[in-house]
Image (tube, rainbow, N blue to C red; front, side):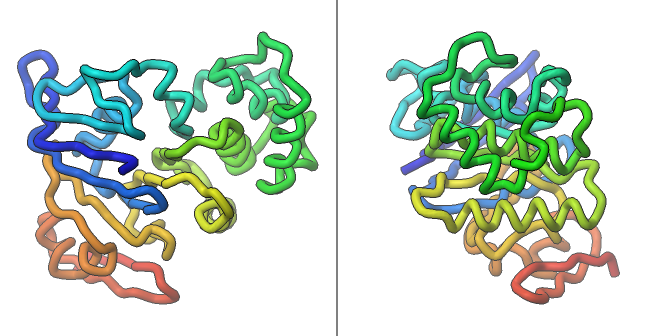
Length: 258
């Protein structure tokens, strides 16, 4: 199991942010975590990375049980994450190549000397993610789509067992978004690919590779299971609380209000 959450709850300042979360994710599975703003997605991700500990219930991530095993950096080194919070912390003067290399040390900025193996891995990721042409350009000069590719490279350099992509297409135009989604699909199908959690509130971003979906609403699991079963008109009408219609085209869903 990559994840094993049983009856998990999280209480902050007297309020329940998460309640009775049950979620099992097997190695090799790729999931979409779908929920509107305020659903509790960020709190759940922080817990998976051991920044939060559950108020109740049992959490096990990549074989590490919260409250029993050593967590912190030891766990987070096995998790690659791309998020808006991380994006804002990256030093804009660092080159794309340096940003990817910094992921090997889980640091913001590059302060240690990378090994030859790390350098070779970073260069290969630059090529695999179509970033090689701007490897030496300052991160701040890159387009949003280019920056996201670099952050994905940074997340992958340690060969993580779990890759969390937290709304990675936010702020991208249509072309850049589709290019990034294509790269994510390729990553998911590569040899020794990590298990992926793709976090979004946009149904149309659910790629064919995400065969499982968890619907999170008001801090609780609304439903979970096979994506085709979760993402249909009846289920999402109940989930969003407004009448919607889901149309599947080219193995991806399209959503419209009716």
